[in-house]
Length: 314
Image 1 (tube, one colour):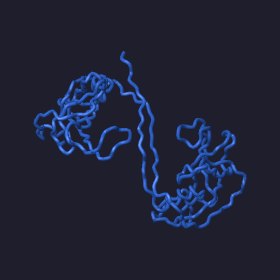
Image 2 (cartoon, rainbow, N blue to C red):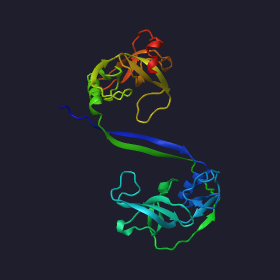
Image 3 (cartoon, helix red, strand yellow):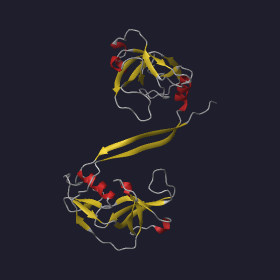
Image 4 (cartoon, one colour):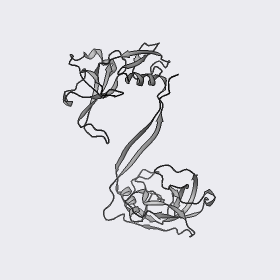
């Protein structure tokens, strides 16, 4: 029985967004150890603030400062913190209604154990020693014995050097097992071959194979070797350099219909100026030494394929 393929994979990218006046004031305020909410049309104070009234959809701009103390409305214990979470030791996730606010803020509560946490307990913000204008400027909440203050005062939301944008890294770590069909596909690639599987019902050949026909829904098992040459069906020109990708921009990424396949796969086009890539261009794979998959595809020098030969694969 062949070994089951498995590999750790990471999907990671920086999520960048600009901030409007409300979110800018909220995050800049955290940097200055000030918590701001926004007043809705019916007079409720929302913390964190939003830009539009959740009931009337009207734009909201009336900022209000609330207290750094509050009350836990609900909680859940986290016995095993993960990478990137607020605390490295077990803690409680809590919803805290800050004094003067009408909604609750989600954050971490530093507590010795779940027996020390309860709904209705009083807490206060523990500020991070270094603050940059992010929700992490609140390091966590900590128990607090004071009474509710109900503090809420108008605030103009004006600060020196306001925060106007944020970058949040998004990351997903997981382990991928390709299964029977794709394991055979990857094994063939390591031998510089490309194999797909034929549907017993519609007879179409799919590359990469999934183990079932996406059209008919029936299992596939018959392996078919395709390519290695193919035809560019559609393409795009990439002008933004990706992090950790050692490819100079601009370059072309294309859908390529390999000869004998009924589904186009995607790959980079090289060996030709980016502005000369075109639909119908005939290409072939280029393998690097010890490469387990084609590094890119290059022109074969053949005449372009007729549109009718690949129009069904667009």
